Figure: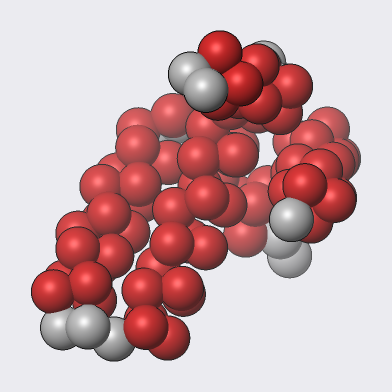
Length: 94
């Protein structure tokens, strides 16, 4: 899974730099609400994950969890953080 996260984070960082017009990721970086757009998406996706878990819908739980991870990585990039920052914090909690 680490390779997938690293690849995804690399794509997010690239979109942040190049801001292609047809990219959802780039639209988050360029959004008029700024960081609030991503924070709102994290809240929305978290609610959807909770509802999917409550309904015991495994497929939907996986889908919404992936949305949360994606938007979390976008937020980390917005804050000029690295995936290594997240990894270090998780390792420290072992």
